[in-house]
Amino acid sequence: MLTVLFAAPSLWPEYRDTLPQALTEAGIAATLVTEADPAAVDYIVYAPASPLQDFTPYTRTKAVLNLWAGVERIVGNPTHTQPLTRMVDPGLTEGMVEWVVGHSLRHHLGMDRHIVNPGHVWDPTCPPLARERPVTILGMGALGSACATALRALNFPVTGWSRTPKPGNLHGEDGLRQALSTAQILITLLPKTPETENLLNADRLALLPKGAVILNPGRGPLIDDDALLAALDRGQIGHATLDVFRVEPLPQDHPYWTHPNVTVTPHIAADTRAITSSKVIAENIRRGEAGEPLLHLVDRRLGY
Ligand code: NAP
Image: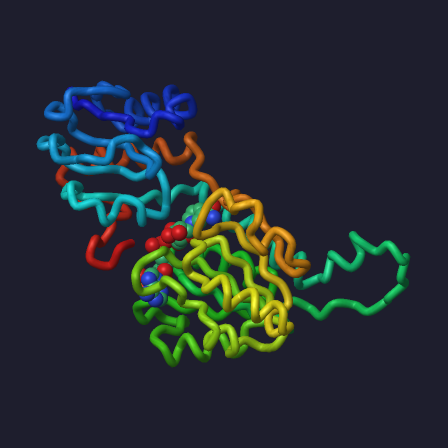
C-alpha cells in the first residue's frame, strides 16, 4: 500500500473525492493523507503555497507531483531532489484557450468602442478579418500550442516562438525579432526562468508594430513593467491585458490599476481542475510504480 501525501491543504476540499477515485480507477492501492511521517511517504502532491518547504526528511519519496503548470516556486528549492512533475491538465488548457481567444477577440473586434459609447457615436467602420490580424505567441508548450490551434481555427495567422527549434515555429534571438515585428496581438505563455525574466524589455517592445496589444497570462516577470508603462504612454503599445504580476494580489497603488490602456485580470486565466488533474496525478503514480517515464517531468537545469 502506497502513502500519498496531499501537501496542498487549501486545495484538499476539491481533491478529497476526485483523487481517491482517480487512484482507484488507475488500479493504485494507496492511502491518501494530508499528514504523514515523512519517512513513509511515497509520492507528494504539491502546490507552491504549501507549508512543506523542507523535503530533506522525505527520503523514500519517489516524485513530487505539482498541481500547477508553473514550477518557479519549487524548482530552486535546494532540499528538493526528487523528480518533479508539473501539471498539464485538459481543464487548465481549455481555460487558457478560452481566456486567450476571448481577450484576443475583444481587441481584434474593437469591442470596447461599442460596449462603452457614452456619446452614442455611430461609427460604421468594420474591423478587419482575423486573417488580416497577425498574432504571435511566445512559448509554444502545452498552453501556447493549444491557443495557437484555437486562434488558427479562427483564421488568425499565428507565429509561434519557443526555446528549441520546432517545425513551423521560430526560435532564438533572430526568431524573436521576427516574431515581434509582425505581432499585432502578442501573447506571452512562457514560464518564469532566469532566461525569460524581463524578456519584454524596452528594446523588444519597440520591435512590435505601433499600437500592438499584449496579452500576458504567462508570468508577471516576463515583462519589464516600467518599460511597458512607458510604451503604453507613448502609444507604442495600444493595450495590455495582464493576468499575472510580480506581486500578487497586484498592490492597490500599482499604476496598472488606473492606466486607461491596461486591463487587469486577477490571475484567473486558467486554473487546474480537480476532476481532470486527479487523473493526471493518478496516471503519473501508476507510471512511477510501473517503472515508466513520468509525464511532464521538469528539467531542473532549465527551470521548467
Ligand atoms: P510548457 O509546456 O513548459 O511550455 C513552455 C514553453 O515556453 C515551451 O514552448 C518552451 O520552449 C518555451 N520556453 C521556455 N523557456 C524559453 C526561453 N528561454 N526562450 C524561448 N522559449 C522558452 O508550459 P505551459 O504548460 O505551456 O505553461 C506556460 C506557462 O503558463 C507556465 O509556466 C505558467 O507560468 C503559465 N500559466 C499561467 C496560468 C494563469 O492562470 N495565468 C495558468 C497556467 C500556466 P520549448 O518548447 O522549446 O521547450
